[in-house]
Image 1 (cartoon, protein in one colour):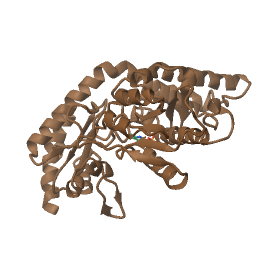
Image 2: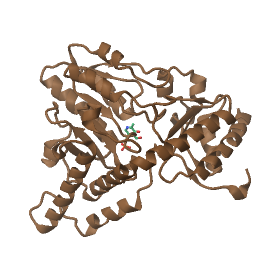
Image 3: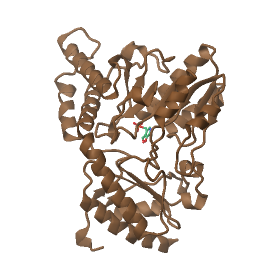
Image 4: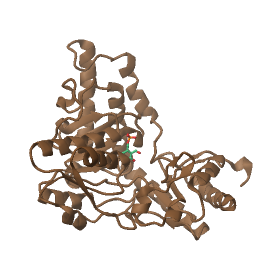
Amino acid sequence: MNKKDKRFVYLDHSASTPVDPRVCEAMLPYFSETYGNASGLHQQARGSARALDQARRMVANYLGCSPKEIVFTSGGSESDNMAIRGVAWAQKLAGKGSHIISTPIEHSAVRNTVDQLCQHFGFEQTQVAADERGLVSPTAVAEAIRPDTVLISVMGANNEVGTLQPVAEIGAVAREHEIPFHSDTVQMAHGLALDVDQLKVDLLSLSAHKFYGPKGVGVLYLRQGTPFLAPSTGGGHEENRRPGTENIPYIVGLATALNLIQQELGDEGPRQAKLRDRLIEGTLAAIPAARLTGHPTRRLPNHASFVLPGCDASAMLMHLDLLGIAAASGSACSTGMPEPSSVLLAMGLPYELALGALRLSLGRGTTEEDIEYALEAIPEMVIKVQALA
Ligand SMILES: Cc1ncc(COP(=O)(O)O)c(C=O)c1O
């Protein structure tokens, strides 16, 4: 590749997105103009309370629920923690049991929370397997149900491989057995509409920085009547479900970002899906040994993920970075020792292959030229990385 052609291409939207300038603009007045504590009884406070109220209604409108069912949190991780601990504790206290159903491909915010409940608080879990395309079967979820099952948590879309789960079908199974159902839908809001009744969820997690809002703010949808014991205690904020003075500018940012996503979804979803397909087809054609991970069709519209045999993930990311491309892998690198992604291993990929994971995730700013540039850069990077092995 010619040096003069080099450009910057951001293909890591599944990790985080830039804050939309319209979102920044909406947030700004709530730092230094309307800054009162929303719980107060004066004009300044009322301004903040109004903004909080409006944001809650906007999010509820997006999810198709009542504003009372929206809890603002510090992000996807906190929403997942609250959903799982809150329901598990309430159910155990009510004598309903202590068995949780989840999957081995959940985000660590779900997996580690369930693990901790099992290791230290007397819960048991069944992890329902995902197949080689990352799909979880509703029938397998139904078969895992026991009389003491108190919660089912299955993510909506996997962050590493992009597979979309049959959430509504799993929700139907949960409903039939009257078991609360949580879904981590953090990756879905970027390109798909979400309706809590259609999805048949009782709890759902969102995070603003995945859809052009600020980092550090999220939503827990909590269906009315769901057993829930607040994991954190303090003031009576968020109807006693999540204490702490509300972060009004960030909450306004989240609601504005969600509103924009909702308006632009009709055009952006298909546009990104088309670019994603070009990226997948081009990569597989240029590198015959490459393998698509996740489901070939049931996947996030902005998500392409591969394993490349003989390529170390961190070496690939470094070389792509030198070529101006921001990408990610499924594997975390700790103390210099590459570790394959536990999600890929759970989907049955061999250890060696799982070391070569590459994730390319598109966004609003991604153009055709960006994709063509990436398709030129990726084979060049693979030759360099394979030469290192
Ligand atoms: C599926 C999924 N759940 C939860 C999270 C955590 O969200 P946050 O970064 O807001 O804590 C992420 C973020 O990567 C995610 O992809």
